[in-house]
Length: 256
Image 1 (cartoon, rainbow, N blue to C red):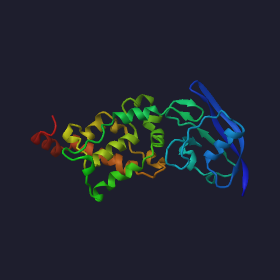
Image 2 (cartoon, one colour):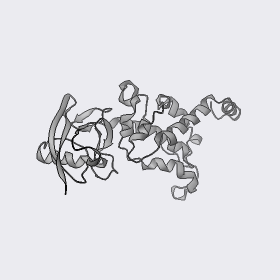
Image 3 (cartoon, rainbow, N blue to C red):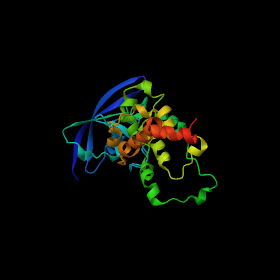
């Protein structure tokens, strides 16, 4: 088995500040960045804080930035880097640092609570839901999300403008709204919830300028921009600006 010594720079610190610290660490064939972080903990920095769980790319816990790009530590193979380069590992930039590579991502859970839940169709028991596969194929893609929040981290609306966080849900939760809006059994409209309107008015859909940076970092390869955000924008614009839709709303009293 081939092994070599790699140069790592890892951010160390807490909410009060910190700095990058240099390490030289052994790398073995087939390892991922998370393996190296664990080796650093075992041999050189026993107090290094990192969040992780499954080590299989399914829990979303080990999100960080590697050479400035939001990635999962457990899914980033050392073989993608040359043996000569220095690998820099830093915490997610969009969220407050707790310690070292661990960030406070509670912003995302707060946004999740603001999205109205699935509204069951009236008169149908939960075990009696029936849907054709063709009707669920579009929203089914979005269920692959592991909530690593890499899309939230790389979205410049959140990343570069702290003041936007109060009024912008971010791509992960706009995708959730799109998923519910596409759901063949969601009865939100009948319950007085207009998902397209709330996406625009309450969750900041208009802030998104479809740069596709969220799609580029998604470890599940969900086409967030093309399949969720753009269609949601189109439906929201139709409802708000299309004169025929506006006239239909007035005639049939679909809105107040």
